[in-house]
Length: 450
Image 1 (cartoon, rainbow, N blue to C red):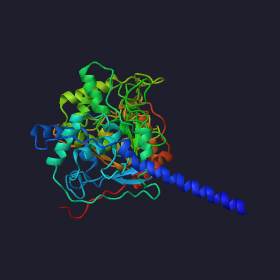
Image 2 (image 1 turned 30 degrees about the vertical axis):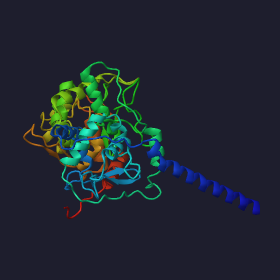
Image 3 (image 1 turned 180 degrees about the horizontal axis):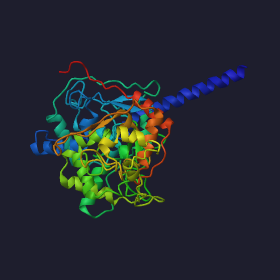
């Protein structure tokens, strides 16, 4: 018995020493792995500030760092993760609760390297993995804009709801060592437009943060395009499926470059309309970009090839749905619910009304590999982004009052009607999404803000 006790004590001592060594290495990484790099930035340079404001739109900074009803950039937006809610932080130039005390080196290391001035590692909800490739001149312009033109707001940051020990930050050092290595933007293309598009998509626009599948450690499985790459092949975050953006069957193969530009600029085109998280992206980010940059992004996305085993085109089946509905044949499961709840806007032929009610026929968001977004918008509703390019922004009501069976039937009818073909949705899928919607985080907005 005495030997067992001694062995256990030795193991405990070794465990404590190992944990202590791991902690010591983790807290030292900001100094040797991601050191601070200072530079002189003129925060009164009007040209630099305007450039920084444009780049802040490209990075969609305001969407994540502003809670609904809160002050711009003051934080408080709740972001749902499997481990709890993370709240975005105050990035206004307020010295005590914001980033007003940041030097350029502090700012650069937080944005590109995911480390705060006190050495604390940032959660990868902040897309520093993408921002790592943003060029020095652009980081300097962003710093000038935030320090000189964003109104300072005194608002404390809200702690995460993650339980201990998951809330500990120091293990993130090892995540960063594994998945957030310092890197620079590189490309093999010689076309300037393609290069610009790749730079924006991989960097500030951080499209991969939502549209690239995640691995077991919540890391993006690809940070750039490559041979048979999964980059931008679609992923689920917060119950929304960020669609496949590659040139394959359920991706962007059915979209033209002009349709992509129109969608990014206005939040809609003749095929579909933005909703969910993408509605915020259009409203706060892409609608503010120049036509040249939007065209560069669209051109780059259209250059992404289909993965091995995936068709580079999508072929619709024969449309037998329109004739059946117009003839009063509602025998197919879900047909009656479609006519009762959906047809008034999306029409019997599933083509909707261009730029008003999105088409369902031939809409790649409808027959996407993962139906999560379709289920969520059906249950909870959605709204188009507000932009000056269309006179009205329409809202779709939610149909949570329908039973799980009714929702599954009508969505299967839509995903396989008018020539569409998609995987089957089950009642369990609807039930899971109801739970996902119920656990949406509440945002943090103080009653009074100065």
